[in-house]
Image 1 (cartoon, rainbow, N blue to C red):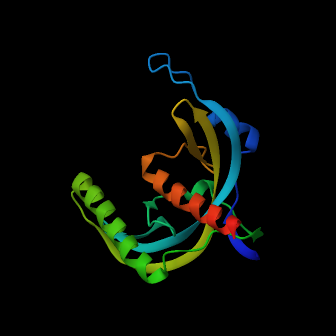
Image 2: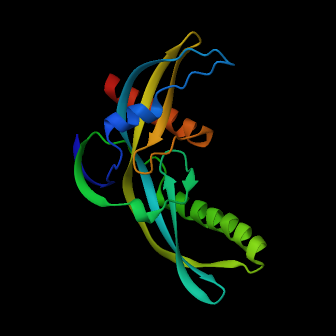
Length: 183
C-alpha cells in the first residue's frame, strides 16, 4: 500500500555508500568478506523537540527515537531537510506516542546529567514542543563470509556507519519487511 509520508532527504548517493561500506581487508584477522548487495531503507522515527532551560536561557533539545525499538539519538539539524514522499509499504510505527514521551524524558534526563556534571549547572526540561513522525534514510550493505551472511548500515544523511546499538533495530526492521513481503 502506498502512503504519503514525511521523510528526511538522503545526502549520500548509492555509489558513495558502496564505497563507504566496502569491507576493509584486515590482515591480522584474515577476514574475507564479499560484498553482495546494497539497499535503501527508511526507518520510522519520532522527532521529539523539548523546551529546555540552561543557565537561565531557554533552548530546544532535539531527540530522534526510532519507532521500532525505542533507541534514541541526538541528530544534527544542520544536515536535515524534510520532504513529503509517497512510499510503498513503509515500515510501521511499532511504538506509540504514549511510550515515546517517557523515553524522550529519560533521554533528556540522562543528557542533562552529563551536561550538569560538566558545567556544574543542571539542564532543565520544561516540556514538549512537538512530536513528529518521520522516516529516516539508511543504506544497508550485505556481505558473505566463511561464517555466513552479515550486514552493515550507513546513515544516509551523515554518512556515519551504524554500530552495535542500532544493529537490533535493523534486524527487527528487516524481519518486518521480510514478513510483509512473504504475505
